[in-house]
Structure formats: structure tokens, C-alpha cells
Length: 70
Image (cartoon, rainbow, N blue to C red):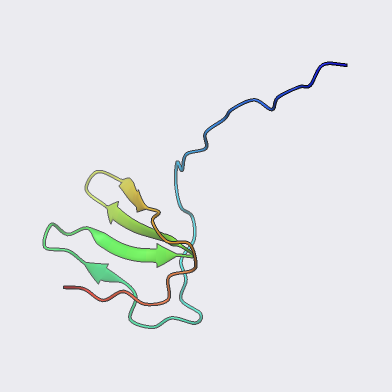
């Protein structure tokens, strides 16, 4: 029997439907451009209410528990 290889696939986020408010406090921010910045698990989310669109930042290997704005 010949060896079989798994297919290559790539997943992508379409939308984040959650918010972490239980263990974290003061973790929702507004930008000058009126976007909303928050985090869920290890993903940073920037939501634009004007465009009803989210951008995702996935560079963390563990849950984000604090955001320190510059």
C-alpha cells in the first residue's frame, strides 16, 4: 500500500463572536478612528463599526490577559 499524505489546508477567521470579560478588566478600548479594540483568547480584535468589519492579530501563543496601549 502506498503512503498517503494529508491534504494541505489553511484556515482563516471570518468573524470573532466572543468577548473575554470574566477574568480581565478594562480590556475594551476605542481608537481615534472610532474603532473598538479588544481581545479574545490569544487573538486581538479591532472592530470598525462604520464598516462592520474586524481585523485580527494572531501573534500570541497563549491567552491575552492584558493590553497596554502606547
